[in-house]
Length: 298
Image 1 (tube, rainbow, N blue to C red):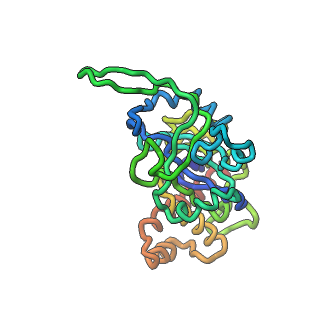
Image 2: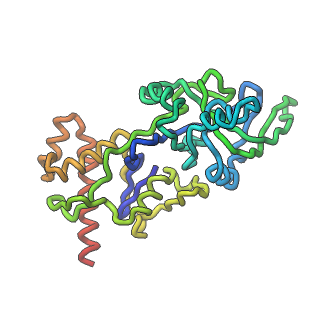
Image 3: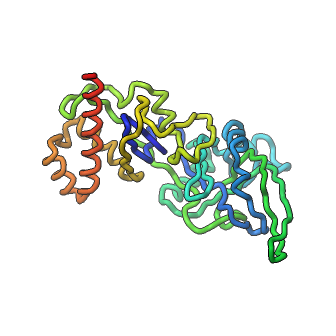
């Protein structure tokens, strides 16, 4: 994910939820031959295919909605949620899905997801075009250049035909709050938010991390510029744990639990053995306030 403010970038932030849903990242396919010898090509995930999947696709359990012997109610019970974003990560198609936390299957999956156990994987569902081709050595291959993608099925990893070891389905951590907006490191306002444009924030939080790999999505896209339209001057990357720590830090500053003086601020994080985070986060926050002051003056 990408969150941009005044030319500064923070990655892997997630807006807090109402507790009724969970978000998960799913590797849709590894672009390697599956156990049946079929290889889905990267070109199969073209812009129109991805857009249609995001518009009408569902995330379900074990392709159960396609079983003709199930009732409509049974099929509905196996729908876990819907895709909300798509991106390329490490040259693999990754889907972010939002699932209903009250769903019985989701409830049963949660202990493994919360423990980051790599026991689940995913399978692309829909229709496909399969071609038999021979390479220069005469060896035959089955390739899939085009798919009609209408669902993504999650199942135990040992039951998925295209799988690799590792964490193929990952639970995204949620922020406890939205960052507060400050005019100065020592002046805070109650019940404020970091950005007044809520829709811009939502779009930024839903965007993939690599703007060069963006497809059209229902959430829109964020180009490499700030929300105010100025070019990005510097990138400060935070991993998921650091992003959550950044949220807690700013809320801690607002609640006067974390000092704002640089020397005391750095000492505070030195004591937590988070010196690098302290330095990086102070530079980001400090620059944010300087840019904000500059925009107010001009």
